[in-house]
Length: 580
Ligand code: CA
Image (cartoon, rainbow, N blue to C red; front, side, top):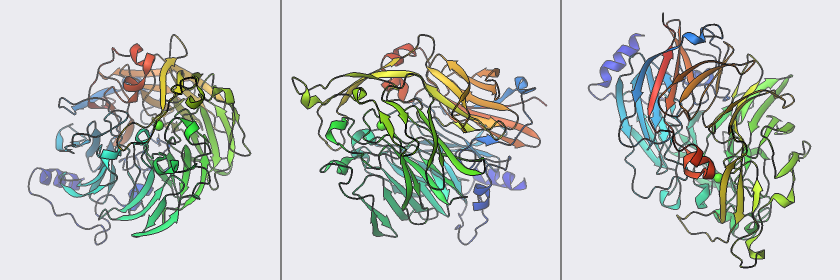
């Protein structure tokens, strides 16, 4: 632990030379650190608390019998006049917490004391176009660098000890609607990213850059017809031109890769989701619209797509297919699960994408009756597709429908967790629907590209949010915890038999993983829409969660937003442990 003290002492003084990762491979966070992150308990160097994204900690110092003793250790404010939604997951390394915040800021904080070591503020230009609040979901660590994305679509690499910029690369043109808010991740010496902007008719892509230099290694567009890149040259076209897209619609076809992905070392595969096809008015783009609304399994060496699962072909409800793919092994199989915006929970063989089962995890799903497990395709309820405006009397507004889930999804971005203790998935979901209708629209650079109108409505008087424990072997729901406001925070599980999450009402909560009973909660002063973590130091188990209400719900939530308008904004990170 001497190294920590040295680092902290230097951080306040002279600049430190950054050694190259190739010449000094063991400096800072190593490939082994990243590969073992789900098992090591003294640090957290990946988003998802391990590459598979299970968000499961083997720690059980804090467990069902003693969790009620948890007390705050410190709280750190992100400060400034700018607050809004805080969706970040902290990283913990060498005695330092790296945590991102709203408006593309990142902080290095002493984990023992909560004292700030440095802050980096991306100084955003006027005219950025984040669709869904000015959030950020976290950073990546590798070597002596820390990486994060910005609302003006840059990827920034900073010296983790000083916060000084090592390199900065443009991921897309922010004036065309590109931005980046997901946590990057590291695979084989490359930093992997996506892009946001599906509501502006951008084209989604997954990219790998040399982590040391930032040079592009490969780029894989998510929309059929666009050309990939490998080592500075065009590689292969995504899909086949016009196979599932009419005319030129693929040129502004969406499929934003806004939520980030992860990597499974057992199958050597990057999993990344692609959002809705653009525009929302599906009558303008008849066809499956590959690879929008799909999960992609990508070869990390060249960016080629190995297989895909399109959860909503000819998507017409803004059911982005971006949600996280969580790898797990059960019944002698290499499986993966994902809970879609469209309300279905999918379990697949992650070696080939073949569905094992697909079951509803929210109530009253209106757009499809079921998923055909053989083909992976939904059995559509055709009357629940919003009408074609060109068929209406004035040509301006198609037939409106009431669809469930709402476009904010049975589950949105907030990551679920898998417990190796219970074998269950814990899925933060919401029960809501929407009035939806289509309108004419044409693509214009930097303008919203929807061609739709909508109002989100709750389904029930007493709750919208619902945390569900789901058995991945048959999709059955073991228990449910209802919450008045929509749930918008990630979940974490532990070997201590606990499930941790937060709610917009401000509580950080610990639940019994077998029953859903709330065993402990703490009011953090603003809504929780972030991703909790836990780690161990000197025999004590620590917890951290970011607090700060915001995100897409207050901006887009229609009648739901009215129900929750009393919730206050904030911006802080809280750390907890049991008293000695
Ligand atoms: Ca979308």
